[in-house]
Length: 376
Ligand code: PMP
Image (cartoon, rainbow, N blue to C red; front, side, top):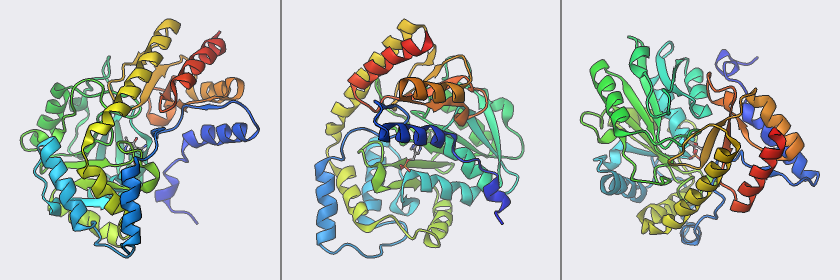
């Protein structure tokens, strides 16, 4: 009964571990969950107040498909002021989460048989969306150090789209400008689109985020993806957005108008408050993530475990030198620590594991103790 389109997608390997973690916790075990992809901070109260105010004022009805004009303008201004990008409100669509913007964008531009370049390892949803669209995933391994990848060797006449994600999930890598420039040159020379997933843009430990859309000729070639989940601890609110050419945004709008209609009305008002606020309150969160990253890097160095050095986001990707699914299941069953197997993120990293440090310093220290015991 089920379509080939859906059968092509595997159920999330990460779910197995997280379901087991929940079960163990229900049974009263001291589970440390380091598999989660969401900040452990509350949504700032001024954002909650803005949603509440909108609800009380009766802003509880359908909105325009792409979102309320105030939000589209706020995003347009944000992209101009923070990223130096000239995307007018017509070039923007808001969606229920960045994930749905990714889904719509891939459905809009990937044709049956088109090739899409993914860097190995990449976040799990890109592959699933490409397959549902009938596209072919072309995995490109990272070079040593994870700051470059030989993308040029994998481009063919069928390459339609290159997906980059900086800072990256699961690596935490922030790609250097030289790599972005290389992708820009390939995209322009070979007439390829680039999807740039920038949801971790503000969680960077040194320096500032640079969007590939800033490079010459890239504004009209990029589908920029961003969202509020990670920056403002709003994963459950479901608010993301995309910026691109009017043609691509119109195509995405068609999908949205016939599926989810638009993101929740009062969440859009809360998003205006979040985006327009003074962003300095984020510094505290970012320095906390940085302190945790340092603890975890020191711990792994002490244990002699190799990892990709994270410069942003809140993940560390490490080589456990054994089957990653088996490691994750046993580490959870014996030491009650939930992590995510690297095999979920691509082809080459089946002995690597993703650890999220969106959890307290105490939990991180305790995880390191349990890891040492487990490995010995
Ligand atoms: N992109 C990346 C790289 C992510 O890690 C996530 C969340 N795990 C998303 C997009 C989706 O975020 P949301 O749909 O919550 O906005």
